[in-house]
Amino acid sequence: MKLGKSDHANEIYRNATRLLEYSSSGSNLRDGLHLLKKAASCGNLDAICDLGYHYHEGVGVVKDFSKAFLLYKKAAKRGLVHAMYHLALCYAAGDGVEASLKQAFIWNYVAAEEGHTWSQVNVAHAYQTGKGCNPDFEKAFRWFRKAALKGDMIAQREVGIAYSEGIGVGQNSRCAVRWFRKAAQSGDDCAQYLLGLSLLGGKGTKVNLHEAVRWLTSAAESGVSEAKTILLSLPVNEADGVT
Image 1 (cartoon, rainbow, N blue to C red):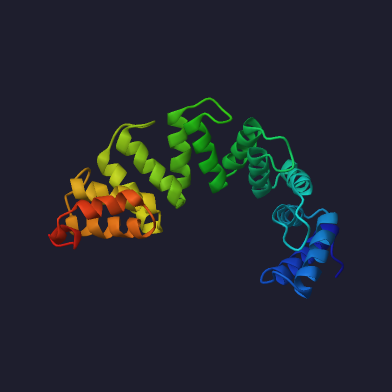
Image 2: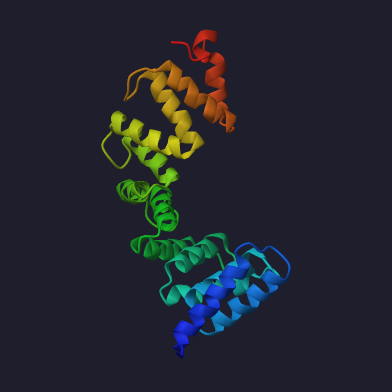
């Protein structure tokens, strides 16, 4: 059975990814890149985007931001969502193109509307800071919540902060603790610190010194200096988690 042009390109791309998956050097990397370029030349959008990544990071090729930008842009303009995300990063950092926070926001927004989680977080940060768009805390909260509901720990922490401080949404300490806990359990050290504080002070939850110390210790071990300072200020029996 003869493959169509797109099917042929897809097959080449699959073969390329198999070679590249565990290769950082050697013949597999060389052969994988050869197939990736071939798939890209046949119009496979994933191959075009992946090739952009190789040029952006200098993996198997000489690092070239300009080539990376053009490849990301080509795939993004043809509708590939994760290429839109990478294109936005190029605009934000000025990689291969003049930096433009407005363009970064535009491309992140398009990708966010298509459900790309990291772009949703970036759009939320943009509304939060006013970088590339007019600041709008309510919109920031809505986009953080979209990403948080899909499990992004940074977004979960930011939703918790929004509820804790009443920024972009009504203040609700109990909701704040719930989201801090989700982010803390996912490994976010800042959320671990904030959850520890909440448990220590009984804000939005019952006081639980044992659990507070556990989360503050986890945050301190991850480098959150404020958590370490609080632990050192606790009486010895409390710092040991004795209630």
